Image 1: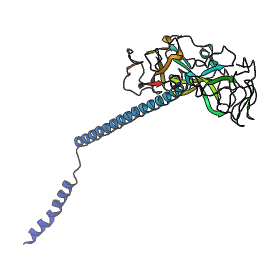
Image 2: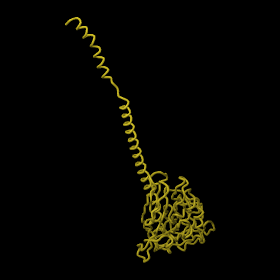
Image 3: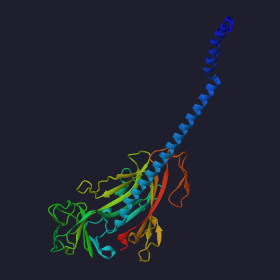
Image 4: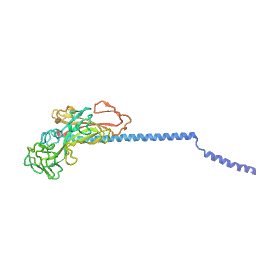
Length: 366
C-alpha cells in the first residue's frame, strides 16, 4: 500500500465513525412527541375515570350498607317494644290488670297497651295528645306516630307476703327503684299499676294515696301480693319521625319516653324527645286485627281503622330510609312508599331504601 493510500484511509475513518454516532443519537420528531403526550394524557384520563367510578361505586355501596344497618337498628328497637307492649308479668290477657293511678293522663293509660296516629301529610288521625304535639321538633305528619306502654327495666321479686292490700311491698335493698317511679306489681293472675310514694332504696315500696303527678287515687290493691309476685318499672314510649337536629335537611327517628328514667329518677312530662336513628325519612304502620278471637290477624288496617287496640295482635312496620348526604346517586332515584303507593321522583340525589317487617305482639296473643 502506498503512502497516499494510507493517508486517504486514515483521513476518511473519523468521518465514517462520526456519521455512525450521529445516526445512533438521532431523537424523536415533534409529531412523535405530541402523539406520545396525547397517549399519556389519554391513559391518565382513563385511570382517573376508573378511579372515580370505583370511588363512586364504593361510596354508593357504603351508603346502602349504612342505610340497611340503620334500618335494622330502628326496626329492632320498635319491634322489641311492640312485642313487649301490654306486658302484665305472667298474667297474659286472661289475668286482671288494675291501676290505682289518678286517671286522665295519656302516658299513664297502661290498660291500653299501644295506640297510634296516622299521618295524613298535613295532620294526624286520630289527633295527637297535647304532650306529643308539643314536642320539638314536632312529629312529621307525613309519617305515623306509634305509642307503646312497656316495662322500662328488670323486675324485683317480693321477699315476703304483704299483710294487706295497703301494706308496703318488701323487696331487696338497692333495687334501683326511686321515689315517684311508675311500677306494676303482678303475679300470674293479677297485676296492679301504681306510683311509688316514698324512697324505696331500703327495700320498702310504699303506695299510699297521693296527689302528685300522677299520684295514686287509692293506696289499696284489694289483694295481698306474696312471694310469687314481682315489681316492674313501667314507661310509655312514643316513636315518631321529625326533622333531624344532627343532620339538618334530613329526617330522623325519635323516641319520647314518659316517664323518662335515663337520669335515674323519673322525669315525668319532660317534653324532650331523643333522636335515635338518622336517615329515617318516613314511617308507616298498619295493624293486624284479630276479629274472631283465634289469635291471628284477619285484616291489616291503618291507625284510623282501629276501633279496639286490644284486638291488635301484629303490626306491619314500613320504613323509608334515605342517606343523610346528597349526591349519592347519579340521578334522582324514584321510589314507592308505602308498598303499593304511586312512585315518587324526588328533586335530590339521595339514595333511598324501603324496608318492611311484620311483628307479632306476643303479650296480646296469650
